[in-house]
Image (cartoon, rainbow, N blue to C red):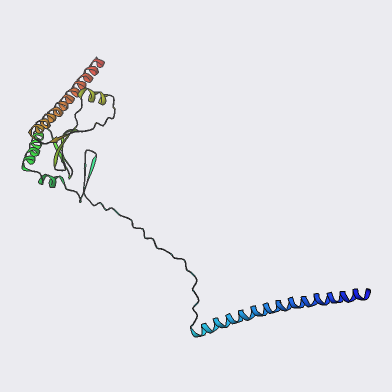
Length: 228
């Protein structure tokens, strides 16, 4: 029995060894086949490169996009600078001057413009201030009328202050800037309104003068009484 068992064990060992050799043989074949295929691929690549020169792709370069910044420069050419009574006015050469606008008026509008101007010129002590934007008439620092032309329409601007309010402001040394009253000159009726407004401005100027004279008289009277 022992001899049979030993023979059986030897047979099993031989069979296991044989199986292992078979597996090893298959592994070796696979490795050899892999090497053969790799070599064949390498030979094909080399032959292809010999027939047609191989061009390796160049490394990708970053694309740089130039952005040009265009700066719009606004050039304003100043043709005239005029300083009157503490005010500075600028006139750009790309705009029509007052004279050019006046030349474009109809004959009727020119007559209305001239009529108002001539009326202002008759005021005693008047002074004219004219630039490329407007024509203005004053007595001292008080405006009689300012003439403008906007979009082909004559505009008269007035500073009409209440005399009592103006005297109060002057006495208390209060700084008040009043907005101008604008009047469009479209017909003979609006010309008459412009003349009446000049008269109102003249009356206010005369009342202010009389008020100042009265204050001066009162100051002299008070001074004389103090001396006595």
